[in-house]
Length: 299
Image (cartoon, rainbow, N blue to C red; front, side, top):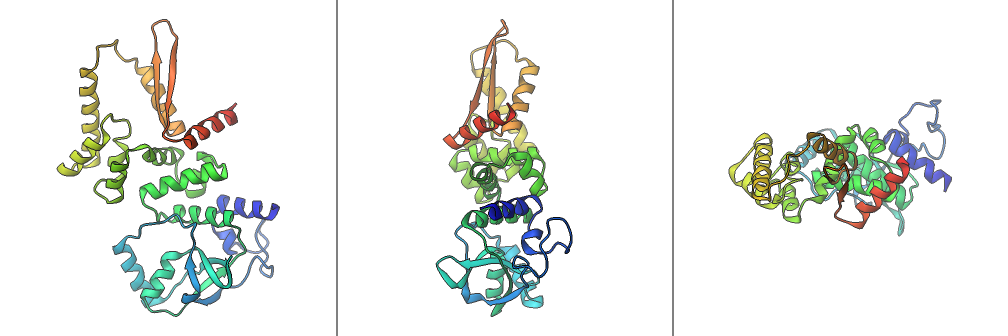
């Protein structure tokens, strides 16, 4: 159990280099070259390999994949795949990291590919697959957001830890996760590339995100224009509402900071007396559990 914990910390904290045995011998925490963990690169027939069920990536960019196939056909697979023995058949292998290279090798009609074999549990396999894809920026915006969510909910990582592990800012992680709160029709438009992640982020606090998303797509607006459209829509919605006292800019700033910190929409209702209420909008019990867990940690 302790070995598994150490593997997960290495994989997340220092990237895949430790898992692949690429760190120089003698470095603190690195694997010794002659240890079981630092195995040499082997070659394995492509027909004895299969994708992992824990692979977070569902979409493959056709143009980028075609370029990879040409590269593999010309130069071969230069970086070994990370694999583990198939839990159900010890003569086969399950791909932990490198599914695109495996698929490209088949398209290029290669019979074998270089691999590094590791002993990894299902939990280790999921975490490495998630982090590897995030580090290589191989995921769609929604796949990236879902990967962050799973790493937080299933492994207890914070946004700060994830941001450091994948070389992103904490606000980037928070903003990407907020995409999961958009209506399913808008998420489909994002997956189908009718709108970009920038467009989608401009709709997060909108009262009518689906309607605005379709207008953005129909008019071919850029992200700045989409943000302006969303602001104008909010202004119009506000004018139609019952007249209220002018919005305190300090309250608006506080809402914005809180939303950035937790990755969910936050509304502060303040009264003239100084009393008020704080509303955090969530879309699933898991998001609520995450907020509660993080509040307890802060405490």
